[in-house]
Image 1 (tube, rainbow, N blue to C red):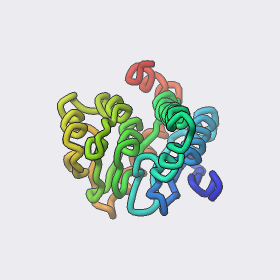
Image 2: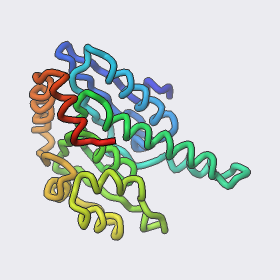
Image 3: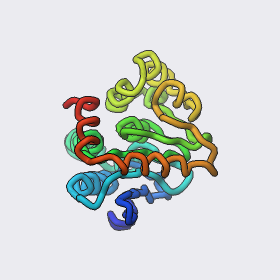
Image 4: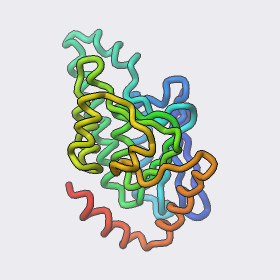
Length: 222
């Protein structure tokens, strides 16, 4: 697959850019190719006057299942025990998350399926998030002796500390309803009413870009 296959782009006449994660076979994992495509997409969208609002969605049963395990395993073959490769991936991932936060256009996650670890971080980094009632979220690193430190930062900016801490220490999956309760998502809706997200994006699109930027900057300090 090419980078354009991994990430589908659709720009409406109203200025709504829909970015759809499309690496279904790998559960839309944040592989090196996916991270590169996302980084470029958000950078370009931020500069494009034709784009007013960005929707981040996904095809398949998973919104995003963290990083690509096959790539991570291959990276361990390096002479340095994978340190350089992992550092590269973490830098790319952090760049994408900060690209969302710093993007002058509102970014809305439309979550169906599961979002785990870095996938959960991806949702938490968006300005708004609408989830299907069937969606689930977790930071399961603890199950294999790891701590999801990067997702922790984004989660702690969305919810009071004790909620992210519970997710991080237990690794348990939480429902969309629970995610809404703790502030990770704005709405948990039935699958057939996810057009609510479209309504939110149209509402956001109707505001002047300068005003939207003045909202985002104070809420997302560097």
